Length: 91
Image (cartoon, rainbow, N blue to C red; front, side, top):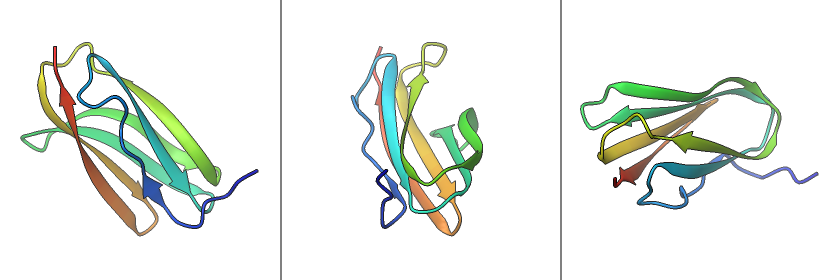
């Protein structure tokens, strides 16, 4: 199986989205991963992943049906890697 060389948070697709988007990410080694969604005020509104995962390429779906239109941020933390990406929910 393919093991990526580096941590990465891929571009969400589709984005803008309504109400479902796919978020891809890559882990070069096994370890703890957290993938959370924040609103513009910086409040966490959804936890997509929190726990131990195997190295490799992964994808998770966020269904934002219960959230209002606007800008959100997906934040990935794995080891020393931290990355944030902007998401646009348009209803």
